[in-house]
Amino acid sequence: MQSPNPAAEPDFVVVDVETACSRVSSICQIGIVGFRDGQEVFAYETLVDPRDEFSPFNIGIHGITAGHVEGQPSFADIHGIVDGYLSGRVTVAHSWFDKGALAAACRVGERPMIETQWLDSVRVAKLAWPQLASHRLNVLAGFLGIEHRHHDALSDARAAGMVIVKAIDHTGIDLKGWLAKPERCRAKAPVPAATGPLEGERVCILGEPRDGPLAHFVANAGGRVVASVGATTTMLLVARQQPYGRWVDASQPYRKAEELRRAGRSIAIVNEVALRARLAGAG
Image (cartoon, rainbow, N blue to C red):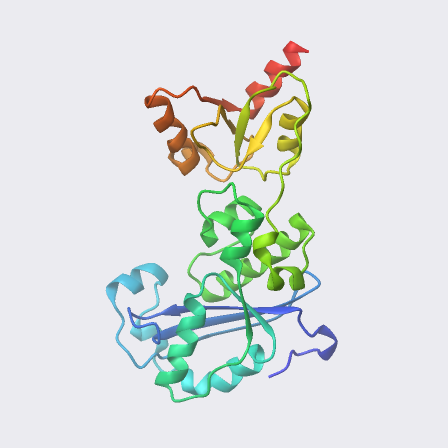
């Protein structure tokens, strides 16, 4: 199946599936969204009869039961539709779970494998926003301001697509760049000024990228921005806007900083507002 409007041929498509039980072939919902120039150009969603059992655990995640899929097509029935959307295109999925599920469903349904070029949006997100302790789709959606209903296949596909759109905008790396060598795309921290009130400080920023506005503020004050909290880190700087809200102390960088402090290391935990006020007073 081609896109509804040939002029809107997508730059990439996104697929997400929900499964009925621990067998990854047990697809019970599938969502597919096409993106062109950062905008959605088509969407497809259907419930699927997995011809398998529904486990209480999986139902608890997505809310889909055997009753919901009664009378719905099997994966074998919709294989041609899914293949039409994905085949020959760049297909994004948030982790390799969906890729494995589609391959397993093809085997169980005795249908040909879907030939597409895969891109993992988890990998992209980890490189675009390395400061986040979690790159789960719901965490990314909250951090990036993406409307999202977790574990609904169509909503998950839309959100994963917007992660790619926002990563391209944030890093300046286009789709071809992410497909080529994304491991080379990690943001670089700004070079610290030779002198300043933060001279000698090694600062890990929680909630903003290493090349963001807060990183430049720190570097201009003489501080060196580091990628993570470690033995030589002297400050954990909590950005004003970050994905953890009032649960910031549960984040991995914060817990690591607290652990180092208990071990006798000298590491300050400072919020952005307090640091800016302190430096403004020093000036």
